[in-house]
Amino acid sequence: MDPLRLFVIAVTPGIALAMGLYLTDRYDREPVGLLVRLFLHGMLAAVPTIFVERFLSNINIFSGIFSAVWTAYIVAGFTEEYFKRLVVMRLAYYHVSFDEKLDGIIYCAYSALGFATIENIMYVFSGYDADPYIGWYRGILSVPAHMLFAITMGYYLSLAKFSPDIINRKKYYSLSLIMPMLLHGTFNFILLSQNHMLMFLFIPFVIYMWITNLRKLNKYYQESKVWNKFDL
Image (cartoon, rainbow, N blue to C red; front, side):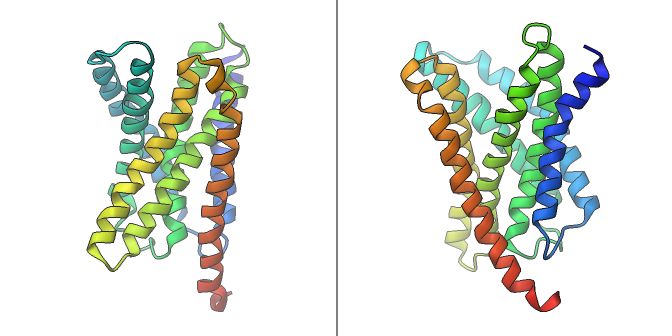
């Protein structure tokens, strides 16, 4: 296939979801420049992630199902979510525009979608010859999954940001990495395990992620609506 068409297939899901989130944040939209920086730095975060994942894969001393657990939860889940959150911490957490809880979800999602986009480009270009449909099912499953992990991350990161209690602040900050890592790890583990019983749980798990994370998004959306209603 023409490389340009492959590129369009690879980048369209991430950009489309990013635009959808931008339109969702209708009451107090974030600076476009900041969002673009988050997206681009999310893409750049793939570079250190690759090196750390390679190192962690090389020290995998386990076998069988435990090897899959290590790969899913530590190599992929922990490493990728750590670097995606690091982008937000460096660029947006202390930014003056981070002034409501919905912002945390938006910022984390843009970092994650940037990461997912560059990851998708690599997978599509390297795997198209072996699987011509790789761009389509990654666009339906993998890229949106990164956004869902990010909604969970942003949900807890916002709780940390606006918590007046330092103990709760530390707790929520930890959860902003632990919870998306667990979701990410479970998503990958089900696929890596090659266990037919677990595969039956994959679609219900994806549906669960959509329902719970859309509820988180809607909760902060409604808060944003209330806080900004007098500015409309």
